[in-house]
Length: 110
Picture (spheres, rainbow, N blue to C red):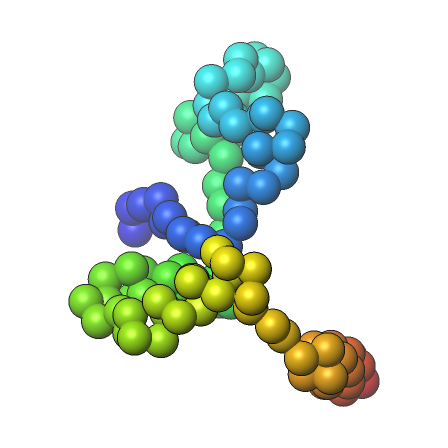
């Protein structure tokens, strides 16, 4: 099975790279000869295994990007409200969602 890179768009995966400025590919760095010898058939490349969640998130992102239908009638009023500073979010709704998230995480950890 041949390895192919997977791009995940819109998940903020490069936030740390933007903060640290460390956005170079690891293959550009010199590899110590001892590590290269141990790598053997991988030829000094790193192997990455994505979790099932990452695969699903990538597929969802690709589906959104390839989706021809954007519901502009829903998006445009929100964009305008954000731009004008009139977008209002209920603090009760925010608190409710935060508590629901905490309860869901606690339930999953049990």
